[in-house]
Amino acid sequence: MIGKLNHVAIAVPDLDAAAATYRDTLGANVGAPQDEPDHGVTVVFIELPNTKIELLHPLGEDSPINGFLAKNPSGGIHHMCFEVDDIIAARDHLVASGARVLGDGNPKTGAHGKPVLFLHPKDFNGTLIELEEV
Ligand code: CO
Image (cartoon, rainbow, N blue to C red; front, side, top):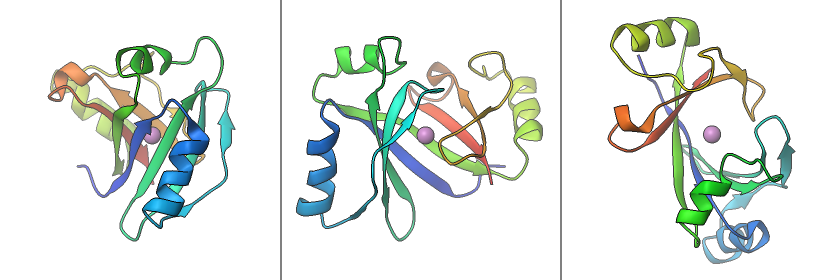
């Protein structure tokens, strides 16, 4: 069911410093910051030949990553995103298998303008998983 690894998201306490590390130290192709108010984050995408890195920084008091950064003050891997062909079929299969979909269970529009869902980390070895329909 899952296809390519679309991105790995890393929550960071300092977005400019993290972008500079990827651009200058690691020599990656780093994009401009984008505010995603619906998701409570500012995002910087880093294009790699085979996948992307998504740097996440809180946007607003109610950002869903505030708690993560409180527990991981120097940042850390926040989620991985796998591609699926049909997000509704994937969701129905997951729910039927006993996995928990976060939120109201309906896809939201993700940072790339495509439908996304998040799966409960306790059902996936402590890893928050995002599915994105491509
Ligand atoms: Co993501």
